[in-house]
Amino acid sequence: MHLKLLADVLNAASEVAIIAADPTGTITVFNRGAERLLGYEAGEMVGKQTPAIFHLPAEVEARARELSVSLGYPVTGFRTFVDVPERQGSESREWTYVRKSGEHILVSLVVTAIRADDGKINGYLGIAYDITERKKVEEELSQFKYTLDQTLDSVFMFREGDFRFIYVNNGAQEQVGY
Image (tube, rainbow, N blue to C red; front, side, top):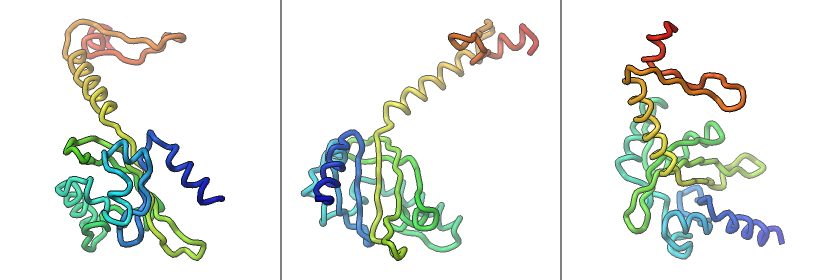
């Protein structure tokens, strides 16, 4: 009963990709959210693939080099995703996923080590969600802010309700003297 409930819960999370792997990196769980996000069917992935299939090799290699330097020993392959979670409990990072169609999407991925009661690692859990749109909006806002900062006109923005300043551009700062 409990395993059926857990499977139902995982599959109900259709807006979040939930992917688990065994200690060797082979995928053991691939929920509907992962199918939706990546375009693969669970049957194509579970017991057959590692998460490497939907990661950019250059991005993984760059992170592996970064970890190797900071940890003082070589980190490669699947260890790139699990070394920090084993040490710290979890790791949250942004990655580029490659969908089955070849399309690239930006995700926020949290990887956690799955431990038995005796502390032994049984596998790893990855939970990812698409941040592509959020990143586009952040970039547009950054460009908008840059444009406002460069204008000589005064621009003040206030928070609705209490009218506290939330933004003052460089032109306004120069004119007001603050």
